[in-house]
Structures are given as structure tokens and as C-alpha cells.
Amino acid sequence: MNEAERNPDADPAKAARHAARMTRKKALIDAAIAAASDERGLLLVITGNGKGKSTSAFGMVARALGHDMKVGVVQFIKSRTDTGEEAFLGKQPGVEWHVTGDGFTWDTQNREQDIATAERGWAIAARMLADPSYQLVVLDELTYLLSYGYLDSDLVLDALAHRPAMQHVVVTGRAATDALIELADTVSVIADEKHAFRAGVKAQPGIDL
Image (cartoon, rainbow, N blue to C red; front, side, top):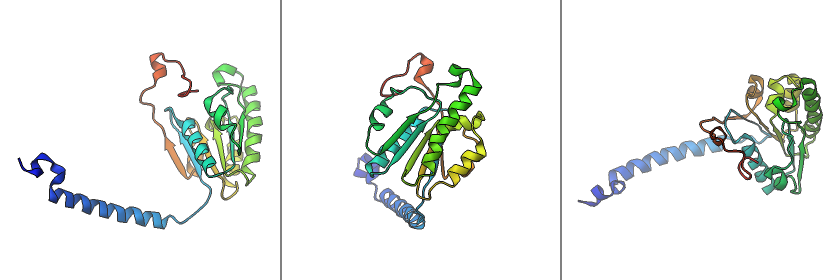
């Protein structure tokens, strides 16, 4: 057996084809990077039924802090204040963290209360969205307040559209509205293929909390 048979990757013709493909790919990527010359604040929406939407947003909080950026976080719907992300990130210099919810709607069972709570939380968010000193603002679970009609969609979208030019915003939650998706610069949809909860596993510290 020769070397090419023992190790197909050692085949000179195959190696040459691979090198040619990578050369073409590098040229395309380099051209795309060179063309992306704009610099401005981005609106990112992380939606879908899968796990990891808030986790992704809080990863961006950590990244922003690594660049000494000022960060604001407003958590809608959620009411618990004992999560790992708040315990760590909420205590970091440069972070202002607010948990504004009363719990899930099936817990409160009171639409008027939910609307009032949403409006109090939005007042904090609106303040941040009007302040250029906040370089990253995370609006966790905001999508529910729009899809349930707890907040005026036009008011929210206008605040997002007219925020400071270099301010980044991350919105999370299921069922993002078409209008929010249209306004966003980047949209990620996280799918739900499998979840331990459906196998009877309760929420785990460090993973879910």
C-alpha cells in the first residue's frame, strides 16, 4: 500500500484541489470583510423556542465588559433574582441590572397587573435607550410584551429605531413580531430539538439558573 492509499489526505491532487478551494474561499471572505466598512450600533434579536436565548445575550454582556463598555440589562417577565448570571454579571463594574417582572403570565393570571409591570420595566429600558453612555442594552424577554400587547409596539419600535447611533441592543424571547424582526440588523432563531425538562429534569444551577 502506498502513502496515498494509507493516507488519502496525502494525495497531491486532492491537496491541490483543497488549496485551490480555500484560496477562492479566502478571497471571497476577505472581500466581504473589506466591504463591511460601516460602524454603528446594532439591534440583535434572539428568538425561537429553543434554550439559549438569554444565555447568548449574557455572553455578549461578558464580551462588552471585556471591552470596558457600559451595559444595561432589563429582564422582563422573569421575577427571580437568584440566577447565576445576575449574581456574577450584575455585580460587575459598568453593569446596571434590573429584574422587573412578576413571573410568567400563567403565574400572575392577571393581565392588568402584567401590563402595569411591563410599563414600569419599559420606563427603565426607555431611559437606557435614550442615554448614549449605555453602549450595550439587553432587553431580556421583551418579545412577550409585544406579542401579548402589554406595550405599545409602535412606541417600543420607535425607541429602538431612534436610540443613540453607537448603542447596541439585544432583544430576546420567543415569538418575535414581524415588525421587530424587520427592524433588527441580526436575527437568530434557536430551535428546540430536545430539552431535559421534558424528561423530568428540573432546572439546574449553572445551566438553567
